[in-house]
Image 1 (cartoon, rainbow, N blue to C red):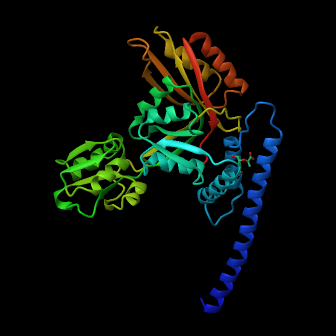
Image 2 (cartoon, helix red, strand yellow; image 1 turned 90 degrees about the horizontal axis):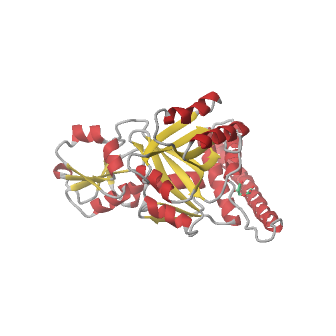
Length: 364
Ligand SMILES: C=C(O[C@@H]1C=C(C(=O)O)C=C[C@H]1O)C(=O)O
């Protein structure tokens, strides 16, 4: 390609960027107008709702449907995710608490879901994320709920039993783990590997074959593991990209998770009910009396109405020995007539039924 051609292309890009800039600014002004209208139409004592997850899901879906390339749908949606995030911040900067410290996968999930224009606050434990949201110190919380290799995150499920929370969104993240070392680490004398217990479990086979005799030390998070390694000469950490760059560690081995499709699902928790988008999921907690056939009775109404169950998990109820609660996720919104009917039917049989929330299916 000649210099001439390159120069002409760059001029075109400059002109396009000017237009993109103008359009983004116009969009941002529209969002400011939306805020003004929302404020003007408030009734006495009502507080404004700026963040609309159902609307954001629709915007992203539309972008993906209309996209004709060459950027792929995910990439295009990611760009729009950030534009919306910045526009919303003009209306109201969201405060989001997540399972910290900085550099965790939960932080990456929060950024994937809300974009980068939020004020994010790392918390030391899952329960603290719940408490921070309950106290009204933040608008939303982000917690991991299940991993495709290791299953349920029990701390999260149990926290739902203790706090009144509304689930207002979900996001899935591919989890890649790396073996990380600091600049002082003597790589041939590693005697200890730090990570979160879930991550150690997700890399168990790899560790068994590469570091069978090295002590595996479970710590409170992957980011914490990365932090510790920085100052030690005989240890390594298993953590992801964010932690690696945050603590300036080197990848000794990449993508060491046993399953290449290793993913974690995260939930957004808050107090805001989310209206239907037409492509939603609902999470409920049910406790049944301890009698034969109770689980069958619980599941039949879903089957009879053709409602797709996406997950069912059992936990001790904490209110009696050998009594259980079921965490159930299914496709649909609790305001759908069909779902309403099923929930009514279940509540006739159940000891207790609580709808944790209906929310748009993860778009990104
Ligand atoms: C603009 C609005 O407010 C927020 C910003 C949005 C956007 O930038 O597209 C979408 C939904 C809301 O979270 C709205 O309610 O439409």
